[in-house]
Amino acid sequence: MDYEVKADPLEAAFEAAVIPAAVVRPQLAAGNVTDPARSAFVEGYLRKGREVELKSFAGNVPADGGYAVPKEIDAVIDATLKAISPIRAVANVVQVGSAGYRKLVTTNGVASGWASEVAARPTTATPTFNEIVPSFGELYANPAATQAMLDDAQFDVEAWLADEIATQFAKAEGTAFVNGDGVDKPKGFLTYTVAATGDATRAFGQLQYVPVGAASDFPTTNPQDKLLDLVHALRAPYRQGAVWVMNSATLAKIRKFKTSDGAFVWTPGLVTGQPDTLLGYPVVESEDMPDIAANSMPIAFGNFRAGYLVAERSETNILRDPYSNKPYVNFYATKRIGGAVSNSEAIKLLKISAS
Figure (cartoon, rainbow, N blue to C red):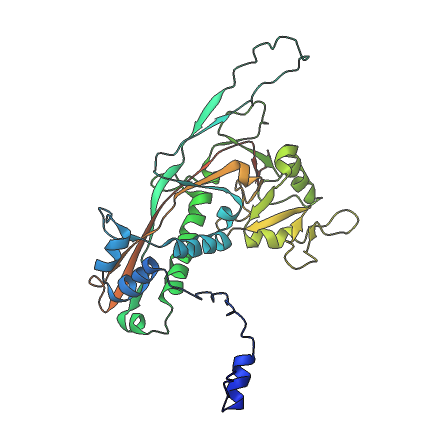
C-alpha cells in the first residue's frame, strides 16, 4: 500500500482542517445614494444651469418655463412653511391638482332619526349645501445668489434655496390668511362680514364677534371675563382643538390679566414641547393680527382645522435666471395657494367696541 507523504506539515494540517462554507455577509446599505433626478436638479440645473439632463427626468417643461422641484426639496419647503407660517400650522391644508377646487359643506348638518330593527325608516330632511371656493393666487419668491456661491462645493444650495423660498412664502401667505382680500390671493378670515348674532340666526359665511363692552380697550374691571365669553361663544365640539390667535403686543397685555383671586389666566408650559396656554387653550402668535384699538378685532379664537381651508398645488416650480440681475443668479419660485373660511361657526372674534 502506497502512502502519500506530505513534505510540509503545514500543508497537511490545512488539508485535514474542515473548511466551513463561505459565510454570506449582508450587503451593506448603499449609504446616501443620490437620487439621479435630485442630483440633476441641484448639481446640474441650480448650480450650472444645465437643462438637458434634467429634461430626461422632468418630462414636459411648463409653458412659462421652470421645473418642479424634487419632492424631497418640496418636503423641506412644506415643513419650514408649517413651522413658521402661523395660520397654516393650525388650518386644514389640502393638496389640489388645479385652481378649480371646491368644497361642499352643510349648514345644518345631516338629519338622522331613530327606529326599531324592523320599523320603516321615514325620509329625513334634505340638508342645505353651500359651496366653498377658495380664492387662489400665484405666490412667488425670487431669491438670488452669485455664481461664485453656486460653484462652491461646500455651499449647500439645496438647503439655502428651500429656506429662502419657505421664509418668503411664509411672510406673504401669513398676511393673506389673515387680511387677504381674495383678489389673486387667499381671502383672510378678518375680511369676512361679521355679526354679533349666534350660530342659529347668523347668515352662512358671517363670523360672530363678541364685544368687550368698551370703546377703545378692554374694560378696567374684570377684563378676563370677556375672554371667557369668547371661549363659550364657540360651541363645545369646536373647542376640542381650538387655539387663540393674536399678535405679540396683544399677548403682552393679556398675559397680565388675573382672576379675582390673583391667579394669572396665562399658564406657561411646564414640560418641554408643551405649549403655553390661555384659559387652557394654546396661543398662536400672528403679527398680522391688528393691535388693540377702537373697532379692531385683535383676538380670534376657534378651531381653525375645521374653520379655515388652505388649498395649494402640490409642487413648487423654479426658473433659473442668470441674465436679468447680473452678476446674480435669480431663482424665480412659484406656487399656487388659495384660502377661505370653510366653517364660519368654528371661528369667533373679539371686537373692541361697546356693543
